[in-house]
Image (cartoon, rainbow, N blue to C red):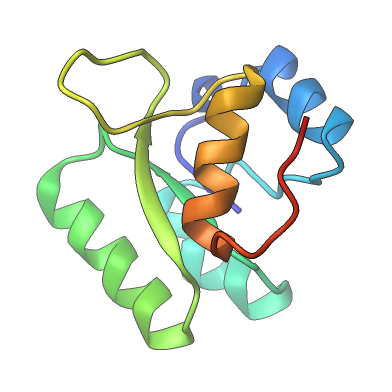
Length: 108
């Protein structure tokens, strides 16, 4: 599940993830996350790191309570490290491996 505003998941990124065999749910606004999770199952969540800190904490607490693995990502590459949410196979692999564990199939 993608947690962020609509620009966080542009069509090019969605197509790349779909091409890798991953159907992304969302984007879901942080304020709507509880309702979205009440009607669907999420194997993992990518959260837009650009939310304000209190919003990020609320999102993480909800996902933790439901046992949904999650990570923060930025739509922009960052020299400080962290995850970039993009259409590139290496970033898709990094996010999938972190959320689902290194034992999952590596996407090409």
